[in-house]
Image 1 (spheres, chains in turn blue, cyan, green, yellow):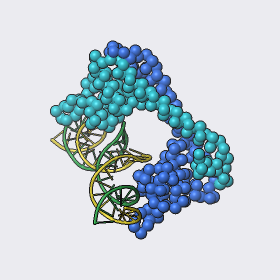
Image 2 (cartoon, each protein chain N blue to C red; image 1 turned 45 degrees about the vertical axis):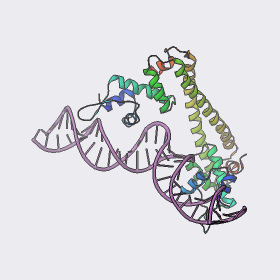
Image 3 (cartoon, chains in turn blue, cyan, orange, purple; image 1 turned 90 degrees about the horizontal axis):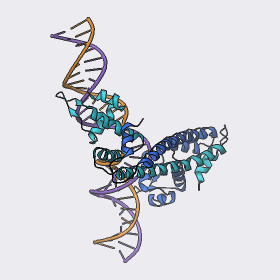
Image 4 (spheres, each protein chain N blue to C red; image 1 turned 90 degrees about the vertical axis):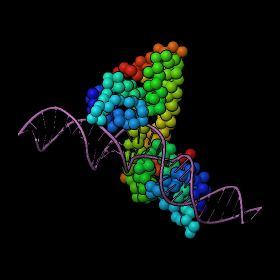
Length: 129
Length: 129
DNA sequence: ATGAGGGTTCCACTCACTGGAAGGTCAAGG
DNA sequence: CCTTGACCTTCCAGTGAGTGGAACCCTCAT
């Protein structure tokens, strides 16, 4: 199948698929006319990557996960290590954002939000601890 | 003062400060030798931007906030609108990450993480709903 | 034969910096 | 006076993960 069909099946933009080939995540064959030819196996791989990306795994993570996925003798511990490291990163990001959120929420709550120029948000940004 | 001193006071890398000048966030004066000259006022502005960035405001947000900060007749509602929009974005990001986190946590929990090749994480990435 | 709707490559842009190279300036020490 | 080292300058390139667009090629139906 051509890239458009593969894109539809994998639920990814064609641009993204070309990009994935560019960085060596996938290597579809080529037709005599130069068109990429995708087998079910390629689509399967694209789906895999799409799902991993949706879970926030980096491209490098995806590359490693793909390699493990294709290595029938892999140890599940290796996969788990990648997933756990990612989980730690997500937790850190959530904590970071939650801190921001609370501060920002306080600021928004304190601000009258009317036509007057006095604004606690700007005041705080001026002198925030 | 020179850029190094300003960087120290504003707690920002010199590279970042030059970048902020580049995109027109700040406009320090210049000495005869071509060195940037920072007044307290400039450092104050850098601090303001640094804090807003630490709260996750985009550069464009910072530009708008700076303009409002310097406009003595601004309406606090304008500031509040920016902050509230940002708050909504942060909430969305947190929700997104929390969803990822939970899915990933389930996967990690299900995986034995030993030397055997059977791995629920990969299985799920293969067929995730 | 022509037009629509695929496909191809390549280049530039995003965001907010960061790193490095090549070179100018300045204060202190020998 | 000269050198050394710390500081400053500009410009170019790269990051991650794509996205947008231009210019061009291929195929199929009419």
